[in-house]
Length: 471
Image 1 (spheres, rainbow, N blue to C red):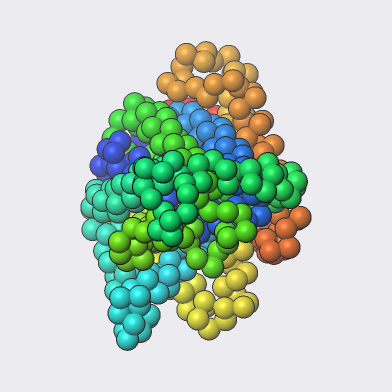
Image 2 (spheres, rainbow, N blue to C red):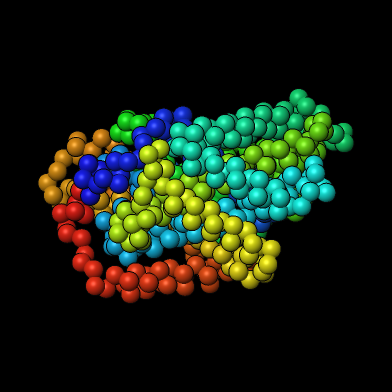
């Protein structure tokens, strides 16, 4: 399905520049996964094990992103990877991937609004959380519906605060590690001693496998580049550069941050009760540390909510554009915004928010458990789609020179990416705290496949020529 042949696609405004695309991806990634999950991973795998886990996670991100890069440059469409899964794997797989990704971001939207309310209660303890939730809900909704360019500018500045904070954290933490900045309690600079204080891998290799989904979830959001491909100026030139830039910065930010955290926080002091960032700031005696971190975490949460509403709205639009949902979801207004799809996604986010208050031990916990599993399942589909796409491209006698961007080391790249994502899902079975993701995620996937076949049993499958399209 070419962009030119699709009138709905033409209504999207190609208003995103590379700086918007890079910050959109960074904004979706630098969030609660990095700010909170890192403490859990340090306590589970040890300091050196955490570094190894994040290095493996960085490799997975690079493998997935170069696969997505080749697909999105060849076919720059809004809603990208679910469209690729439908074309190169099966329509039912594409349908399932879209719903998994929509649910991930919609659930994250509800939990982000709740968390933002708690952040504001730190400064305004007498104002109910629901009032802040409503304020931020309206703000995020307006950022998304005014125009794509307005949304992108909002996300650019949200993300910039986080990026500056991460850089400052790495520099200050490195200074504390090597004694350039004194520790608050007068203890000597730890250097790199905490990395091996409990042994290289105190709990063995298995915890690394068990925490792979948590690490991958911390990196999730990079794939937003693929979602935004159809709204990017000059995608053939901008997308490859944005992918390379984003992955390089993520590896630098994440590995640098994790090195500082692991070096300054002993394994037996790490956890998820308090953000490891707060622990580090307390150790090095930064003035107003709690206020600074609370502001940064609030910014991170709002940035993630902003990206989440964008992603979930585009997924509903894309499903309707593929004639899977009613055409009302595919309507794009004169400003290039799928207003109805965004509105329904925002309502879904509010329902998730309410479920976290009304039934925190049932509905909300079950939905949240799917998020990490769903992201890895989406990455699996990206690697598999790229493998089939390149293979079919060559089988048709086409030259690799026709591809404006090519993933290196094919077929190793998609196969290794697929295998590592699959291992991450297997690792969930060994962790009692995360095993619920499999019990919820696998039935949800089967339900989506069943729902597709029930609702599409009388519809004609797409022609092979349509599936072979390369822009």
